[in-house]
Length: 243
Image 1 (cartoon, helix red, strand yellow):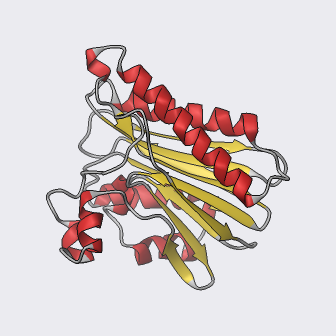
Image 2 (cartoon, rainbow, N blue to C red):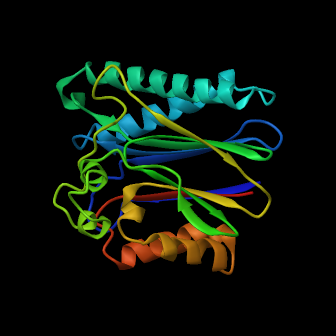
């Protein structure tokens, strides 16, 4: 199992409010996390780093390789709740932090199994011989409208509310996460990314770079370059885990 990550401010923003971590949890076990901060110039980056670090530290403290999938599900949710409380409490310290928050998407991988957790609109993609599948569902206004049949997926891409999310870590003292369990095998891959990448590339374009690119170790760099060639109005972050 190998992993690579990259983060970049993009072409328009002056500050990178994304943050990611890749952490080994022991032999053949790995945790990857991507957070996309929101808030004022001094708070989005604080929220994303704090959430990522608190979440990772809690998983490091509590994860055991022999845990059942249900037990791993519980520690992922617990770590997300702890990260949420940490960001929320930090947001109360001063006016400049008020209302700050962040998305979070993470994958915990071990032999033959991966669990993915998400809050917000950062995504997890899964690649296997059948192609690419977006594991997560965006917690966003436009995704809700798509689910209700009010927008088509194509209309959602250019909707003025596409950046409004309905769940985030930090704005309130409670948060609801989605957790997904996947069977994985050698040769598969998982990509985590902020919306700075997914807004610039279609799923099939990402598939081509991940599966058909010459080298996996520079895949994240290639994805970043494509996003920047297309304008990259937001920060861009991605983490690729090859199984």
